[in-house]
Image 1 (cartoon, rainbow, N blue to C red):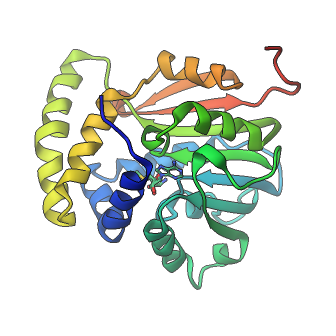
Image 2 (image 1 turned 30 degrees about the horizontal axis):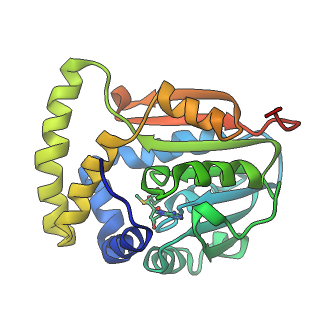
Length: 241
Ligand SMILES: C[S@@+](CC[C@H](N)C(=O)[O-])C[C@H]1O[C@@H](n2cnc3c(N)ncnc32)[C@H](O)[C@@H]1O
């Protein structure tokens, strides 16, 4: 089991922030961009959406949400790492999305947001890092408007043995070396594969989402199951305990 301490997680992301995007593109062979696009395409079809992009990191999802003529009206990008948020702010500077994005430092386990404040919530590669996963998922449900939609993108493991074996070889032995050389933060990229292999995915993660109060939960594997997009909804009226 990977032990997670919130200060350690925050410091780790502060340390990788500068090279984070470059490493992502390289080690995922740009699949990360396609996965975020798939998540954005699953937004509700309603104008002027208020969206919380939790664990926004360097802002890739917050920016992808605001393509020309997108239904998104305002994005709050929330993250626990100031280093990552500063990068997001730098990337958005001078772009139209800077005027419609608010960046805030907050922990997923105790979000500084009102109940029912958002029509949709996105989170890419964030939930796996939560120190208190149950609290984080409950907070995600709390801040969504009834009928609101949560889109959760997270790494998973391919179910086919033919894909899984070579993938794990790459993930455990090649990726940390390449990412470590570029970022000079090898430990962070050793944490990546251990945290992914430890984290529930598919039906197990869907069960956790339901426990946290979500309904109509579905899992959509992407790229042979290397990542999964989960779509979940806040019920219209509270589910009885
Ligand atoms: C792997 S990065 C993903 C960033 C971005 N969403 C993306 O698609 O590239 C994970 C992010 O989650 C943030 N994070 C980890 N634990 C968190 C928590 N408890 N609350 C808020 N953010 C957290 C980290 O600071 C980091 O920026």
